[in-house]
Amino acid sequence: MDDLTLISRMHTAERPPSPETTRSARRRLLTEATAAAGTPARGRRVAPLPRSKRAIMLVAAATACVLAGVSWTAYRWETRPLYHPEPLANQSGPASTFLLAAADAKTQHASDGRFWRVHRVVGETVVASSPYHPGVHYTLQLTRDTYSLAAKTPKDFGTLPRDKGPLTGTQWDGPDVDVRPATPADAKAWGADLRPSALDLHLTGPDEERGPFKQEGAELDFGVQDERRLPANPSELRAWILNYATKFDHQRLRNPDLYLFTAAPILLVDRVVTDRVRIATYRMLAGLRDVRMINATDAAGHPGRGVAMRQTTRDYGTIEWQLLIDPETGRLTASQGIVVTPGPKNAGLRPGTRQFFEIVKTAEWTNAPRDSLLPKDITDPNWQPPVN
Image (tube, rainbow, N blue to C red; front, side, top):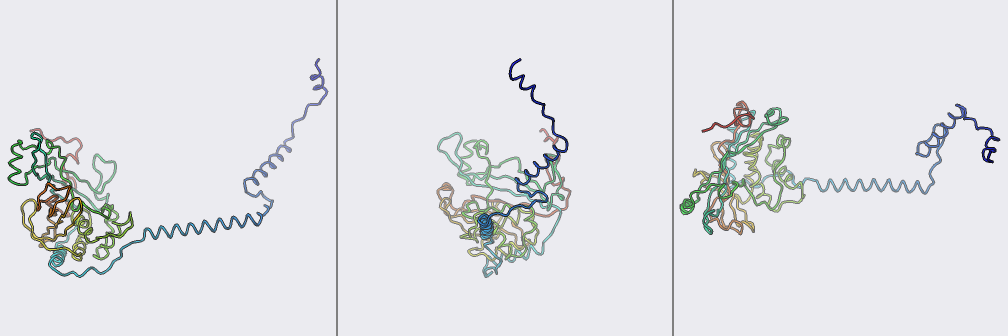
């Protein structure tokens, strides 16, 4: 027998601890662990922090409060409204008188309904290159029909077959982009090329612009909730629009009147707002400076009256933005941007050319059934166009 075995047999085996001893040890371990975690054990007082540590913690807490207050103050300063309702400029002169008359006419023809439907023809004038004869160019007008149907809430509009939930509206384009020469000389050159289509000319279609050269201010792309909250007071509406335009960079606009003239007409046609807001839009426009009265012809050749404001930029020269309005109903019938003096990016267009334009065919409230106002391929996913 080796020495290690002999010694081990001389010692008595250690007995396991009793249950009471085990429970007592477990309580002691839990108490110590709780104290180490910062939670006082029951029946035990925690020694206070030394005075120096308490002072440090108080200073840190005070600093955090000050920083939070400074951050909140800075946030409120950066997001404060830059514009407030104020009396509109002196509304006198032919343009203001015309716009106020349009507001009165809209008041007399105000209406409401379940759906707001719009049909417009949007267009752009471009200089196209011949696909067959290098160096040959001609000026063409591209037009496309656009449609939209919208309700005031998703509940009112409902769900379309291809969508997973209710929508507030939908929009769609006509199937074709129409091409028309701008002048007889352009028609001759285009005809010599066998009248190529927009697809043949690699033209995707007209850009939809009422004022494309904004140097400042955000697009008025607010949602349905904001549409329903828009003020019907002209002064309040002006402040609301300008505050939305500056909400991102938070800098006052250099030319707020130009911004309002080119941006606010979206409320007259595109957005689902009450007619009271449209009336307020006309009254707000009547208070803008540098707006003048015009007699003009739209892209379809219809003469009309309206108002205009000019904009000059480095790239596009001087463009005159025109709004044509039916004075009997207060309805916007057309808008267009006329080249006065071309710049480097539209140098191929002659002065007097409609670079951008739209004709408003329909913009009205209706209570007709929704599906009767939509094309079949939207309401029926299995619909197929008839074969000729």
